[in-house]
Length: 497
Image (tube, rainbow, N blue to C red; front, side):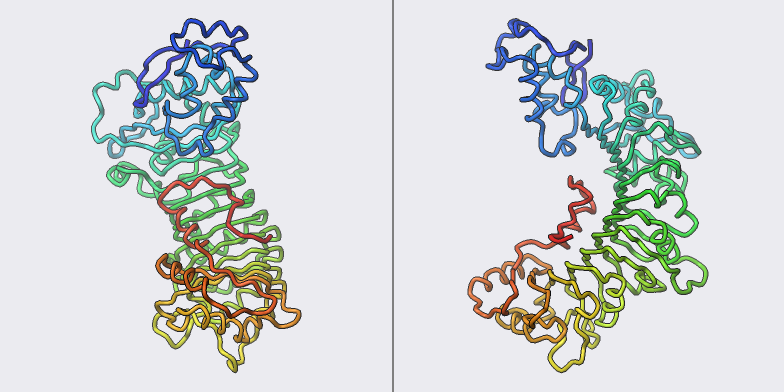
């Protein structure tokens, strides 16, 4: 028999640990029988599977309002079928109650995690059998050790649950607790994790930072895997990477990477991008950080498999251009959030000759004579080389507009005139591959005005589809920071590639 739990995680009853019932009369003892009580378990199981929430990792367990927990609170027949279906239990989001270690003391998961939490996780793991699981943990910190916690819990089953995770999504609090529990070691080589998320600490984490060694909460040491473990997809948020700790992550294995609000030195950036030779897609929201020593020209690096890339950075924070001597021959989708002149942009695009879809934020290309570094599309007679001289395959261009700094962009007709006459784009020219230009704004109020203006504008560019977007890919990227977003690493909102 296994326990069931209410929304607070407290035991409220028992569930038989049985395989799916074969006799529908098992439900006759329930006072309110659902109409499905007579269905065979394989049919009911298919209904159960289809009832799972579309985004299970946003439902914190135990949540009896949605499947699979809901299915265990209807009748004994439903319980028996549900607990026998391992695939119903493959996604788990749980909040752990943890008492932080005292200063200069070690943390042990069996001593510092609430025993009832460990009991619930053991119950959940039994439902999985030999199935691997997608795990998401956040930590709720206690300032004082609760007297009602009782005896220490069982961490053996808990660690087996972690090792069975094909996707492990944790906040910094749990990562710190796990790192202290492991000491100088790592998770067992039997770990099934190929996707790892490390997110900013949840509420209360700042208050317990002093209880952990100073170098743990902010660097790659938080990752619990040895450098021989083949993590393929990684999400890292709010950490600092310097040259000395680049080797704490095995970048060579990665096929997908997201670095969100990560401070990285120029030296470390050159090393990381030199090792990501199997990378296929990436989002890099990075800030520069200083590191002693001279930084010469970047070494030659090639990422032969990278197809989609999003980068947000301030060039003034890095000692060398971050795309210097970086060659991306297969890149088809590129989104940039920065401040770059025409010449700086063209120098960068020489690294990406196969780009078909390009997204440029509102300060690209930048006006060198304006203190705001506002965006400025080159006018006729400017003598600027066309963008197609760098990326001749470009088909799809997305431009972020800031009408506050660029008053001439406020009227859609005028903006389309500028797009149609700038020698930089050569839109409408015979043989020009650019067939779609999308316009969006940094702020919703300007986006709304652009949409309203688009309903009236009559100017067109022959052979080019001009579209006003009601969303922003840059805004979508920002949502990754500071909140949970449930989407795949491949979904970077590019149309082509």
